[in-house]
Image 1 (tube, rainbow, N blue to C red):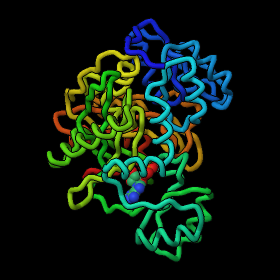
Image 2: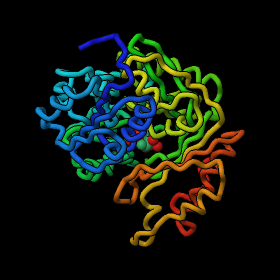
Image 3: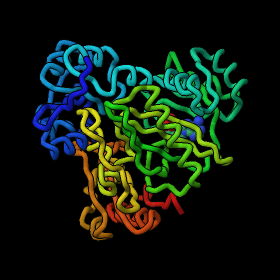
Image 4: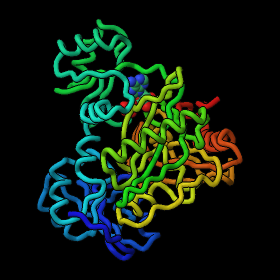
Length: 396
Ligand code: AMP
């Protein structure tokens, strides 16, 4: 189905997936007068709590998917691991934006990296691996250290292992428990940065400022904007991202995560065909947030300004902050918000905190990104003074 007429406020927007990204999409959509329906196997979800309608059914219940699509004007997703058949069933009865081709490419690391390489975008050398013998051969070609990643269903560093020496191939392959993987060269990067961008139904393209990211245990820990990188790196990132969105014919929001190598080169690490954790600070720092932009893009409305109003930083709040020595604790919200009146609290309504689970985030704006990061760090440290896992300063 294709249609260039905008879907106007008052219509219902459908989201496949029901996590925090769907929740922030739903909040933006409702602010603009849309209704929102969410579809996922779960109930009382972060998205469902703020949506008009929450449908709980498995993604492979294609009759339920079709009924859902009939009840909405457009279907988007907040989670790229929705099965391709689900997106195809939805497309029988509703516009799906971005299209199923974008999901297909980005939900599988091997397809994604092959697409990037074949279209001339910079990626680390990689090889497909389906057996221990292929892993040994790939290690010989790529060299050590290298990173072995499952081809599908990977996020936040799940399903990946660093291999420092060829003798560790056996353990790495058995430990990953996957029939299909990608071995890629380990990149000795100086920084990790991301660029969030959007493309409209008419091919219009906008991007936010480059964001600088710090990961802990392969999970995003803090982001700041604008990134402290040479202007040339930003220019190069924008060119790459524009090319990717055009090549995939994206209608929606897409984030590209990059490694900035020590020689100044940018290497694409990963694509996320939706708003991204590093872009959460756009809610408090920019004229148009990544979530409002997703609404605008998928409804066919004109895209909004992505201008950053003030330098900003974001710190993730993981479930670890709710746990101390295996026991549940209540984080000290008053102390955290007393740390700085510029800190904004975002919580996702998740009922069960678990170590490593993203429960919410803090954002702060300030006259410099360094001041903003100090504010979110101070607020997070005040939540649970005895927690040490997230209280260091990664941008020191
Ligand atoms: P991913 O889930 O693939 O985005 O990986 C999560 C994090 O692991 C990245 O943000 C990096 O910090 C680290 N990482 C992943 N792949 C590599 C690599 N090839 N070289 C160096 N670090 C990596």
